[in-house]
Image (cartoon, rainbow, N blue to C red; front, side, top):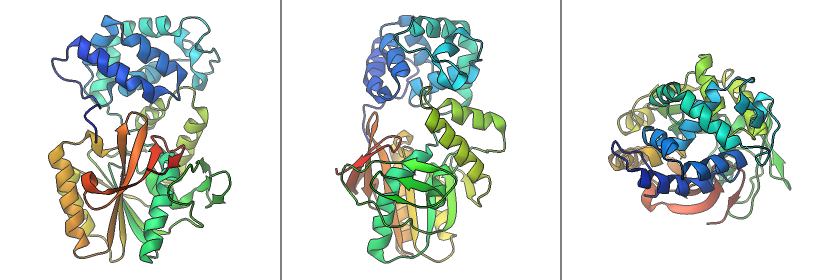
Length: 341
């Protein structure tokens, strides 16, 4: 975990907010539009005051997603959002000025969304970075089918790991209705096959119910505007998830993970989490560590965590206690690549 990841405070000074916005900006390297917004917001007191009122982490993700949720194709700002039919480049005109006017005009609605929603970016692309580590750990133990438990699962899309195809350039594997692209720069080898998942369980404070269109709309709004292929994968994953049997458990993982693991059928278990526990208090993280260690006394368990090293890059660690676990890979926050640590 890193202390650089900002949680908005009730009395956040605008100078501190501006510093945090500048620190977040490199995370938007894959989105020229969001990089522009963040860079300009850092010098804009009125917009910083809005950001300071958003309590979810990271606040800019929530702000930008709330704007996307409210945008209509005929809004002037939509011209810079390909998902809404816009095709203007960032250097074409002044998108920040139009964005700023939109935020100030819809300020109340945006903050209402921010109060009601959390980030919960359920990025299925992270499976492309997680899969090689899961496969290596399963193979090294000689396990067959495993029970998969995703902590901070949101809608449970990462539990589809064995039901999609993967394209690592030099190697392709798996079968499914869509393909996840990945790039190995180093680290664990691309596996020859996808591990078999015997059962799928997601744990989340507030699981995302995909039978409610407004929840799906929020997941889509969290996708960055230029990333239309990523949006297509999300929609395909949501459709596939609707066909799968996934047990979703609502509750604080500090309290429910232990009983959840104890209640699984016999067999080896992989517990994973992806860009989720960095938001949890230290006491919750320690309780999760304890639950994994306790479960390992009575069943074969491996725990794999993929959490931020900073904005945009994650560390993939293997071990019962994340803080002291071995780092086996670094990975792009959305799974586009992974590398040796």
